[in-house]
Image (cartoon, rainbow, N blue to C red):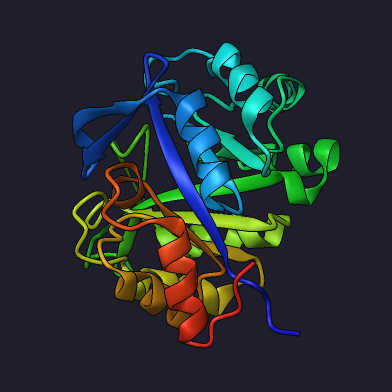
Length: 253
C-alpha cells in the first residue's frame, strides 16, 4: 500500500517564542509555541516539529518547560530538536512529553549517539536532521553544516545521510541552507539524492512557498512535508494543502 504523506508544520523557537528566519538568519517573531501548536492540531497537521534553534550554539539543554506546555495541547505526535546531545538529554525531552527527538550536530560529532538513542528509545522515536548547503567540491554537490548551519564540516551530505540510514534512523530530515525560508521551492535534487540511498522517511524541509512546491517534493521522494513560514503567516493553510495534494492523487492522512 502506498505510504500516506504527512504534513508537519515546524515551530522554530528562540527564547521560548516561535520565530522564522531566512537562510538561518533575519529572525522574525511568529507567536507563542503553545498557541501555534493548538492551532495547527485543529487545522489538521499530522505531526509538529519543535526546534530550539539556538540550544546547540548556546550550549544548553532544550527548553523543557516549552515542551511540557506543547505536550499539554498537542493532539498529534511532535518531534523536538535542538540541544539533543545524548541519551540523557533525549530522555528528558521525551519524559517532558515529546513523541520523538531530532538530533543533528551531536549526531555528526559522535555518530554512535544515533545507535545509542535507537537502542534506548526505538528507531521510530529518533530523527536525524542534516543541514546541507550546495558545495560543488563535494562528490554529491552538497556539504553537511552543523551548529545551526554556522559550521562547515567538509563532509559530503549524501555520504552522511547514507551513514545515518545504516545506523537505523527511521526518519532523515535534510534542510537545504540555500532554500531555507526563501519560499522558492524545496531543494529537490537534495531530496532525490537522499531518497536514492535510504528506505527511511525523508522530510522535505526548507523553501516551501506554493502548493506546487509541496507536490514537487512528494514527486522527488519526500514522505513528510515540513514547512514553517507559509503556515505561520497563513500563505497556505493545511486543509488547502491536503485538498490540493489529494486532487493530485497523493495519499494524505
